Amino acid sequence: MCKGSVTANTVRHTRPASPPTRFKSKPTAFSARRLTPSTFLIVEVDDVYDEHPFIYAKLVSAANTILLLDTGCGGKSNDPEVGVTSLREFVETVPIDDNGGEPLNPGGRMHYVVVLSHCHYDHILGVEQFAHDSPVLVSGNDPLFLAPDKLPTHSLCDNLGIRTPVYRPSFRPHLDQILSNDEKPLGVTLLHTPGHVPDELGLWDEEEAMLYVGDTLYEWAPIIFPNEGSIVEWFKTIDDLTTFVETSGKSDKAKVNCGHKTAEGPALEVLQTTRAFMMDVIEGREEVKSRTTKRGEEHVEYVQAGGRYSLICPTRLVREAKYALSA
Image (cartoon, rainbow, N blue to C red; front, top):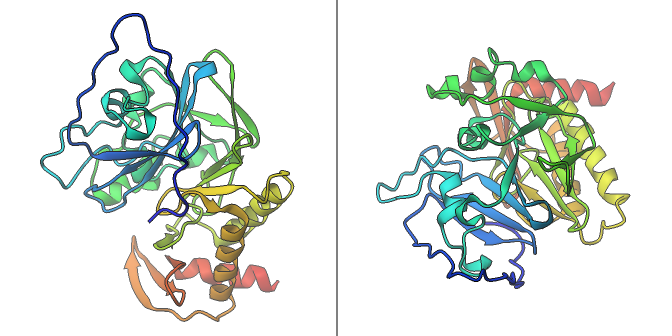
């Protein structure tokens, strides 16, 4: 379940002179609720991969733009009755109670800027719905990691036997200020946050004190590192994010929003307690709960008492982190 509660704010809409378009509800692969005056959490509720990814939509009316963070699993639902499987169709046609009963982008009036928190399949399978007419921003930390010949492997699409989406990424630097297509500011800063994978990124919305961290961390489900991850880099990222929030001037009200499970969590507390759990793992205070082999490597699982935090990763990554932290 998501942390925190939905704000009770409502959005005031200026009615056009002619009657507004009526939108009909159909069963959808997604749900949406308001997090802040500008931002909605979209959840892919019953996908066939059992990922239930979190997608974030920030509506910036002054720039006539919606900033989308991630695009989910492509609407591949377990429910055969679902009529809306396209994320774009959902955003443009499905009424949202928290948005005055209107879609987030009625009729596609607003433009899109898409940001991908990282390249794993459960965050990119809907990207082609936007890539033909919208920029797709990604981390510029390691462009070769996202090379077309590497993406099928690094996205895990090959591992699942599914087609890899085709899109042209725009590699962005650390601390990049995200702009609309006509170069109006969207109020969001892009952060390089490698660890989970080299191309992991985060977003910081200064006005609303919202930190978005993708799969860097979350609660109540295993934090998973693939073979390409690095716990050493992850610790550096967590320390950098902690310092970033502490020096933001809004550390007391900053919220963290993740790629799964956690939204509107207290940012500093979640960063600090996740780090403490990972240190318990590296320093041997957490016991291995299970061992499996994935993609040719042994993976280990750790579960904190009470289950708030857990970890699944290659044994090699734990060993590398122990060595690096003891050096």
